Length: 70
Image 1: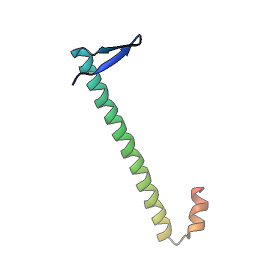
Image 2 (image 1 turned 90 degrees about the vertical axis):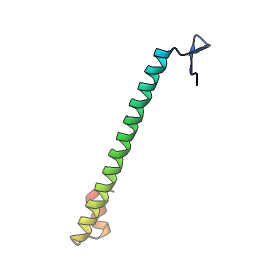
Image 3 (image 1 turned 180 degrees about the vertical axis):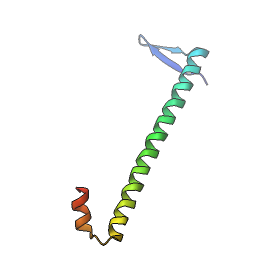
Image 4 (image 1 turned 45 degrees about the vertical axis):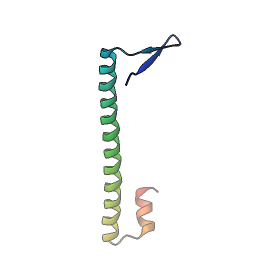
């Protein structure tokens, strides 16, 4: 499938080398997006785990909110 770029308002087909570069950029972008998603999921999991541990220690929801600044 041919891909294009816009140069000076004109639609120009990418060369083979440009397509290779574009593919590499897209792969890097997908890796960054996945890493950010995993980082966010880990943060949320740790937050929930910490909250549960505080509950296990006997703190109530209001005390936990006060500690977490929520």
